[in-house]
Image (tube, rainbow over all chains, first blue to last red; front, top):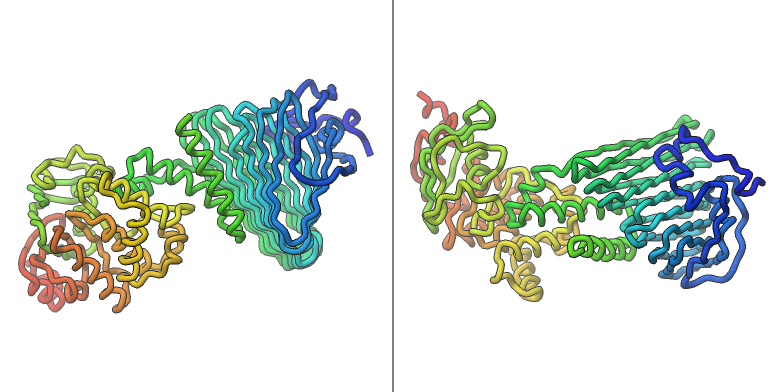
Length: 336
Length: 242
């Protein structure tokens, strides 16, 4: 396996690196191996993780001084990742079994944060990830999940903080009957650049996946949502869907929504869609007719649009956590 | 309460309302009937201030004050309410949250405390035979036609308007639901004016109108009492065009 310095820099022609190239998300010059402070992780035991051939994962692995293992079995865990210093990074290895819930909150004022997560799911895991980093932070996040036979991963993500974010999330549905549902909500404001790339691989048949990404884009923000859905040869009976929606709130904001399908099996259901639009005037009129000013109506529609990304998430605990955090975040934005 | 004087309304180059005059006093129920496309819904929307319509001449007064320059939300806060024929869905916004915000906005300083609000809400929902699980659903999202109309009436009861404009509130309702909704309408009319837009006599069996107006091609061509609705049910609209 090659280590970070030997891995060639990926070209922008690659789907993953089209909108946020490696040079842009790297904290220094790409040939450098900067010193990194460890992320303070509120739980887990010290552990080690294998290196990776993928450049971002390999980089985080190379500079990280902390790796924690979290074992969940029929439990709920709230995990705080505190990020401070110029450059900060860490790795997490998560093993979940039974019916478990995990809420990860990533916060702090680090200039650059790198997080790598490896997870395996046996049973049912409902998880929430909340990016609550300061509004000038750069954030690179790489996640790899394996969902076993007859197991289920629910994955809710709220991107509230950060200035330049890149998330690369990959889920392999490895065993028959494996399911995953993902909801991603991204709130764009100021000059925030928020890039989510999600790869879901149906390795075997009779597996289900659903991905919903909702991004609101205000001011001069830029949202990127790219998805790659792969249904492998022989994975018949797979059922997969991806939808990316963007709510454009200003003339200067931008949004890219690019779902891609690679279907190598014959008997499957696979759907994808993307839409970008401003706020519906009929929604504004309806709320105004109920006494809400136009600003109040627009704020409520934005809140609803972001929460609607979690429509497929069945865990009320996760949805409530997302709603609470989203309301605090939106209120903080309004009140400066 | 409401005075509409010689109102002309256009969308683009097309004139839809062609000189409508109408007065609704407190406690009065007016029904407007007419064929599809005759301008009934446009009239309700214009009174509520929908930005898609342009008033080219005429005037609308509410409580004696011209409202042409008032924003939609200002009209709502002044005591006007429109029950939409096709209410918009607001995905991600829970009904309970929406109702609380709306009541706070419209009733302002007189808005109930959280506890009083819950009490009022429970009372009205029971009256409308609505399950409390409604409150955690998203506004009009995936609702059946009947559920949407019940939610509209629930909002009307909570907002306690002085003028209720009800645009085809009876459509999509089964017989039992129609009676429940009609009871809701009857409960506000002693203290409010009401304009019902409907195609059918059946709502008027439960809500007795003081006046029935027939609208054809953007004009009110005939006004009568409740008997006029019965006559329309039997004879249609052709005899009014002759």
